[in-house]
Length: 415
Ligand code: NAI
Image (cartoon, protein in one colour):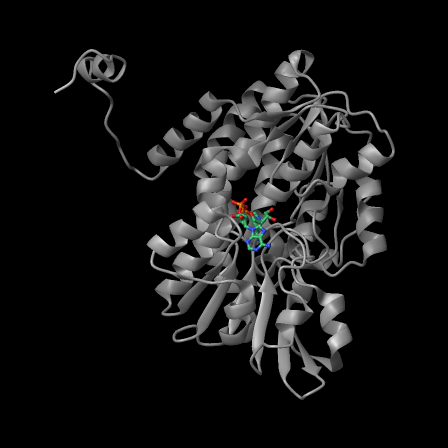
């Protein structure tokens, strides 16, 4: 078996951590038990381009239990957990091509390595794998799934231009995904990444969050809980209004740049923080990103403005501007929650990856009738995952009575 990981001797630690995640993913466990019996993915070759974390490892074991042949590479150069990659290769016999900190060439070399397995199905996070396949006009017989907002945006753009070569299920758009993973997962782990990297006290800081989408609102909620003065930057009037009424200060980035102590971009957009903002930031401002790609902060622009740069702590780079002010960039501007922390907790990835596993099964069963489009996760799958998650938490909810059902479906009855 081929693989490319940092160090196989890290596998023991990785295995223990995978077991820890597994213990916190009850829904995926149920799916794995069923997959082991029914083998719905027998003979299906799945190319996975995902953050190589403990939770992803549990998803890989689930697909394997279902009969799939898997190959895995990283969906970001800085998000791989090397101990997990080692354990997947050594303990579970899964071809893994991922090393934390890999350069651009190795990153794409690893995508090519996974494509060498001639996959039937792709499982992507950010659409880099799909994009490579499309540039080469490759053939994927069944279809694919996509994990994140940025990937779904890219795929919808391909669909619009009639460039999409095979059907994709947008896992990100399931309610059991974005309402929990993007909001509570990114919310908690982004703050976790900033704290692990800097060990700074969040209380009393002016904490600027650019983007009040699902991820941004999660981060805002958690930063507020730690005592920060949260400032939101938005371009969408609805989101901006929500932020105002959720009790946050909302202002343009040019104003926020002057007062912020810590900045997080989480928009999926490009150059949200750029030289005109770095020029007016306070000394020792901390800037980081939790959006999918490292383009939200104009790093080349920051480099140009700086006369000196050095790494001061792991994942903390100091840039000294001409007038001596310092700006600290975290995690090379890559997703800070995965670069400096461990990504989302298993409890939320349980639902995201339940969607992945069931969407792969759906694709295998239904590919013949699907067109070259981006599809939503079927509502019954999404709902079932929510129900199973509640059961696993020991929480019961009510059911509509027949009278209530009738009432809610009728229009005649008023006051
Ligand atoms: P979303 O679409 O819900 O929110 C993005 C928000 O950013 C929108 O409200 C939009 O109006 C705003 N925005 C766009 N351009 C802006 C600009 N120039 N200035 C200020 N605001 C701007 O998207 P979601 O789900 O919150 O995802 C955001 C990013 O985070 C995506 O790149 C996504 O792939 C990524 N993501 C990262 C995760 C992580 O683990 N760090 C997990 C899930 C998603």
